Length: 468
Image (cartoon, rainbow, N blue to C red; front, side):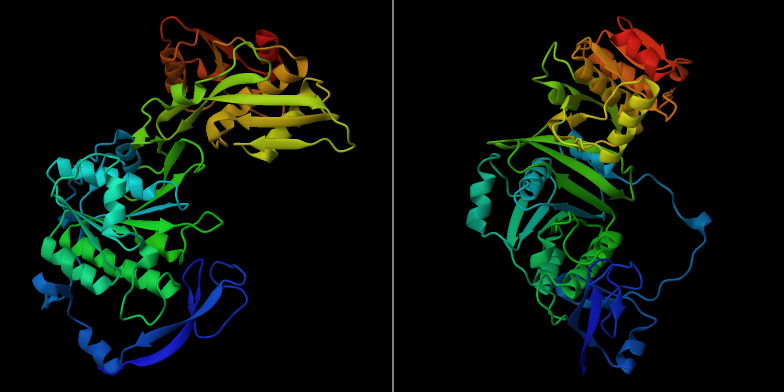
């Protein structure tokens, strides 16, 4: 078959292809994202001969014709629950929606050194211990390096096999010969497809390689985990179309120099995208944190002004977070505002409400707001906690250490109802808090746990008077 070589321009953000260079991508409107890469086009006669048939690789890599696909009615589709395999980590199972779905393609992204390979190595060890056949393909490390890392997490049995290779054709043949249940590709930026004359990690290579892995997973019912590095903007390196092709996108977040790691799902065709999993990095590897609220509140100062515990929801999981505020007189004409872990504009809005509705003079105050533990939250339900922390710091009066507060604040100073109030109150009671300050609108139908006082407030002034 004669192949014609040509070049095309691809958008690194969305994967849009163009015959000529453009300053702005016409699809995603991003500037200066078009890069030129070589592509190969088969003659029309060869492409036409491929129509009407579908080929899949059989044992040994040989192609076998399977006929053509036909349209079907939805009434003939078997709507059974997807069988899932537990990974041995309840935190990961929660983010995946209950476990690994057979034949799914999962992308795991994160900064270099954050712990992606360590997490997947521990997951594959758990699966192999449960009797599942696993193939771990590494394009970045040698077998000696992998073994040195594996010694930290314990002994590995023969169900988990390792393969160091970057040629995708060779990897596909080995996968079809070994017939594993789960395959890990570490990483997608190192894989090389010989049919694409571009460097590994380029837009064309990443896109075509992912397409081959997608067909391999779906046609052979193999679950494939793909490791992807992220750019300085925090997105997976390569074309954005990569995230559209896979079934699940997981991001591993956190400061590489801190002990905690957050696994967050941004796309999941088999479950919710609102769940997170919390892990802690220890010498023996990653250890899951099954009670994030207790972990995030450890070391909280008692009797300190500007410290308030609030509750945010991550999917169906309530998480108690400490909000800290520090206010001091400004030495400049324009006071400084800084927010860590929450939206800066939301903090400025709440300070304006406090100044207008409660008469708190914050115009000449430097304000520093921090959500401890490195957690990032922008849920409106933490408004009341932020506002009370600001008031507590300004008046230098501490709140009750065993009180938790949550609620959304409107521009008129009203405390508005939030969702899942029952779960938030139950989480506070579980951790030993004795009182909860919450919107009065949420009191109707609320399940009241024993041993905890519920205080309903309708406005910001009422909330301030009750706690300070």
